[in-house]
Length: 265
Picture 1 (cartoon, rainbow, N blue to C red):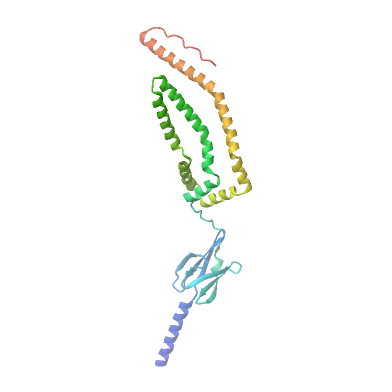
Picture 2: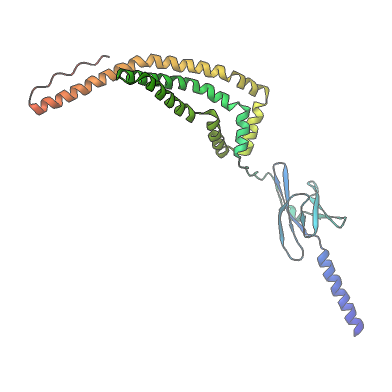
């Protein structure tokens, strides 16, 4: 009886030891671009590992190598390698790679490639000239109303500093970096930056000022062409409004209204 009990105990210990030494099941393989992940299930507990990369550890085993052709995964434990075969060949290929969100630093690095501050400064030159001309007209109106010339000059400088300070390229660069990081992914910005490192990208950057200058000339020319029409439209509108007021006054007094002047074509 004691001998039988000893044999049963030994068998139980051996079975327990075997169960404890069982390597995890290789349940699935996931490919994401150039990266691979592997799903293991412990035995006999049936606990899932989640998707692991090579070098990570689960249930005492370290994932060492994967043979895609043989669908086997090498697991290392205590210096010993155990090959486990993919169960049912549950491979998931070409899974979509999740897009990594971009950071403000990623966006700023890309903007540095295109010399954003210089581009913005050149783009703002036309706006600055237009604003300066408007301020000059304001100063002339103030002078005509009898304001002190020194006070006008000080006020004009204060306005100029306020407006141009709001359009400072460094400040705007921070805003644009934030926008780019919200709109583009990290990979998008990496590829855009890589393009500007190419000869074609460098050529595009080098010729951008010339493009902006030519475009500015076209815009300025079109504005000059349309201004006489705009001025005439403004005069016609003023005359129409005057005629409308005169008609309203005449109707109120009972007198006949004067005919509205004809607008110039």
